[in-house]
Image 1 (tube, rainbow, N blue to C red):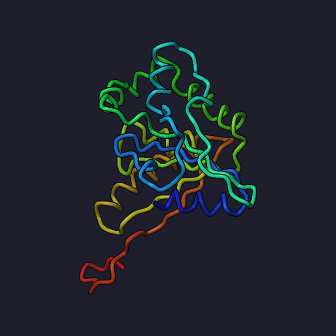
Image 2 (cartoon, helix red, strand yellow; image 1 turned 135 degrees about the vertical axis):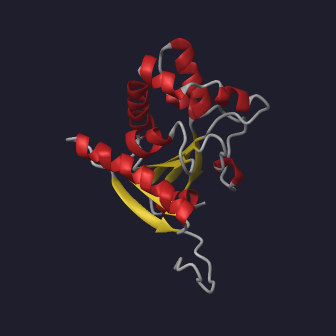
Length: 201
């Protein structure tokens, strides 16, 4: 919800924005009332699957679509998680992300994807929605793709422990890299109005 709202506000202000649904196990962009193409297109899962099968990066133009155009000149583009049919879960579960990086030049593959985004869409902003917590694609979304990471969290022990691991990995990469430093932003979300017995607020 935050990603879509920020994306729409930026587009209404005249920016060209690409929304990428990398929350592959629980994709959510398609649930919002954004304009969709007449025929559902493929997304991240099929894009990666095609590369694994052929060894060549597909043309990203076939995996993105223009969703909204605003009077300000701004526009909203979307790269969905994938085609949401009965075989989506099977296609997702068949992807071996560790093998992709260890044996199939996964790092270069996603660097090429970033280049294609820039050349095909020329966005002012790319907003990537990532699954919360630890996952096989966490490092792609929090360390390789972004220039900045915004961590939305509920301030309890479970969330804070998870965030510590993510931030530690980002900080370790920042120390090793001479050319790219990822900025981290923290946003507490859905903090309830309660008696605060646990000192959450």
